[in-house]
Image (cartoon, rainbow, N blue to C red; front, side, top):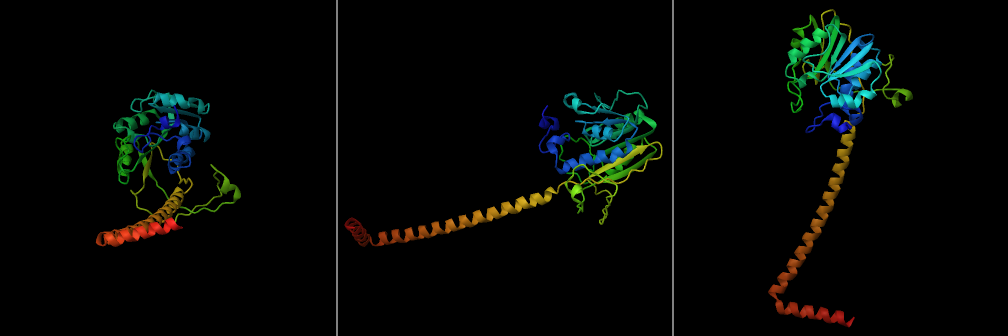
Amino acid sequence: MDPTELANVRGHSPERFVPELMEGEFIEAQHVGRYLWASSAARDRRVLDAGCGVAYGSTILADAGARSVVGVDLAEDVLETVRARVPPNVRLERADLRDLPFEDGSFDLVVCFEVIEHITDQQDVVREFARVLSPEGLLLTSTPNRAVSAGDNPHHLRELLPEELEGLLGEHFANVELFRQDAWYSSAIFNDTDFTSKGRSASDWSARKIEARDLGTEEFTIAAGSDTALPELGASIVLTKDKTRDLVKRLTHNARLARERNERLRETGQALNEANRSLERRLGRAVRHPVATLRSVRRRIRRRANR
C-alpha cells in the first residue's frame, strides 16, 4: 500500500496518521507529541499499542526503552505493509480491541491514542484494556474533545467530552487523571545546533507559559487510568514549523496579484469604454448627417490614395 492508501482519506479526513505523507504538518506534532509524552512511562514495561495504525508510535515506545511492544490493529493490510519497518522488539498483530487475544495481566502499559472515537462499544474496549493490564498497569488514551471538535470526521463514530472520558475510565480504574492537549503559539531561542536540528530534546531547555485557558477548551483530552497510584506524567511540548505564517505570506502574495490583475482589468475596461463612446459618437454623426459623413469618408480615401 502506498502512503495515500495507508491514510485512507475520506473527504479531508485521514483515517490514520502516516508520517511520510504528513511530515512537517501540524498533525505530525499532535500525533507524535502524544507518543513522545507516553514514552516517559514505557521504559522496561510490556507495552500494548492499541490501534497502532502504521506503528510509528510503537516504534517511539520501543525506542524509549520498552521491554516489548505489541501493536494491534484491525487493518491487516496496513500491518503487513509496515511490518518490515519496526524494531525487533515490536510485534504487530491483527486484533479487535473489544476482544483482545491476550491473557489477563499481559501488559504493564496500554496506549490507545485517537482510536476509541472510531468505536461505538467503548465500554467493551476499556474493559478489555483493564483485563490485559497487570495490577500495577497504566492506561493512556485520548480522544478529540467533542465540545470543540468540528464533528465532521467520517471515521469518528463517537467523540467524547472530557468528563465522559474521565467517567469511562473511572468505571474500570481506581485512579484517573486528565491531561489536555492543545495548540499554543511559541517563540523559541536556540543556539545554531539546536536551531538546525530535528527530533532533538534537552534537559537544559526551559519553557514558560504566559497564558491560561479554561478546562474543556482543549482540542484533545488525554486520560491516564490505573488501579495503583498514577506515575508523575509531566508536560510535553513538540515544536514544529509555523505553517500559519507561510499561509499568511501566500495569501498576501495572492491578494497582491489579484489587486494588480484587477487594476489591469480596470484600465482595460476604461480604454474599451472610451473606444465604445468614440465609436458611438461617430455612428451618431453618421446617422444624423449621412451625406456629410459620406463626403468626409471619400476625402479621407482620396488623401490616402494620393500619398
